[in-house]
Amino acid sequence: MTYFDALGLEPALVIDADDLKKRFYERSRAWHPDKFSRASAEEQQKALDMTALLNDAFRTLRDPVKRAEYFLLEKGIELAKDVPPELLEEVFELNMALEEMRGGDESVRPQLIEAQEKFAAMRAEIDEQLSRLFESEDLQAIRGLLNRRRYISNLVREVDKELNVHV
Image: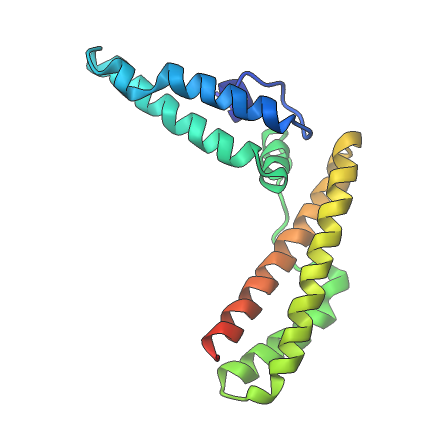
């Protein structure tokens, strides 16, 4: 059963958030394990499984990025794990600065802060582009943006981690 099926939704990139929440709560109440406390062990397990599935479905589908990734995977479209070519040079410089920071060179802190802000802005821009693309359901374009966003998010996390370690 897919996350969309679990919540009684047609697979789509655009979902009404209020409807999603309403469906989640309705189904969560219907499958709540307490309602099955006197049922057979098999029915109790089914209620636990459905509750877990509903929770996972809701967590995934309420987040537009996670929903898009899930939607693509359901369509058999894998996300790439390689560096977007247009970011190669910036990533190389960032990795060098991160290594210097890990080695104790605090002079690269301003460079890392600047990179952090730049990549966070890039991620925000991608989020805007994704929301516009969801209407068109151009899956290959969405895939490309999600790949780029995933990579940029990892870079932001790495910089955040290093900046917070060396405070």
